[in-house]
Amino acid sequence: MLKLTALSPLLASPMLHDERSLVETARAGDGRAFRTLVEPHLRMLHRVAMRVCGDAALAEDIVQDTLVLCFQRLGDLREGSTLRAFMAGIAAKRAHTMGRSERRRKYREDASMAPALPSDPSQDLQASRTATTIRAALLAMPEKRREAALLRLDGGLSYREIAEVLDSTEGSTRVLVHKALAELRERLDGKIDKGRTT
Image 1 (cartoon, rainbow, N blue to C red):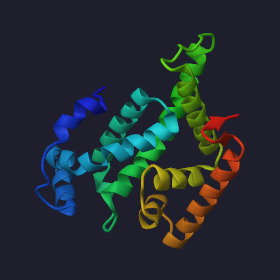
Image 2: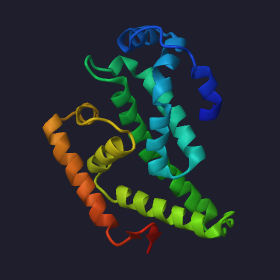
Image 3: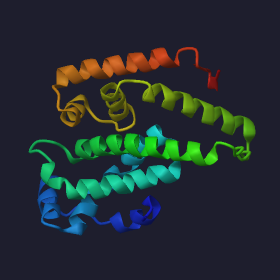
C-alpha cells in the first residue's frame, strides 16, 4: 500500500480553483483535483488516526484508506459541508475499525513476544504509557462522544463541522463535546500526573 510519505510529493500541486470547483472536478474523475483538495488535510488525518491506533505505520494505512473512501464517496459530500469535516469523519471511523482489527491481530500474534527495548527507556516508556492511557480512555467512551472528542482535539474541527460529521445540530454538538471532554478528564484523573502514568 502506498505510504503517506510516498504520497506527499504527489500532492504538491497548487490550488487552481476554489474547493467547490475542485470537488466537482474530482467527482468527474480528475485525480489531480482530488490531490489538490486533500493535501492540506493530510496531517490532520494522520493525527486523528494516530490518536486512535497509536501506530505510525497503521496510521498511514488508515489515511490511505480514508483517501480512497473519500474519493469514492465525494458524491455524498453535502452542499455547504466542508471537505475537511467530511474527511475527518471518515478518518475517525476508519481509525476505530482498523485500529480494533489491528489490536486483535497483534494480540493473537504477539501474545508471547517481549517488547523491544526503546533507545531511551525512561522517556519512551513514559510517552508510551501516557499515549496508551489516553487511547484507552477514549476507547472506553461511547462511540459518538469519542468521535466528537477526536474531531475536536485531533481534527481541530469547529463545532459546526463536527455537527456536520455527526449529523447533529451545532448546539447539541457543543454539549456532546463538552461531555466528551469532561468524561475524558474524569477517566484520566489520577492516571496522568505531571507526565507520569500510574
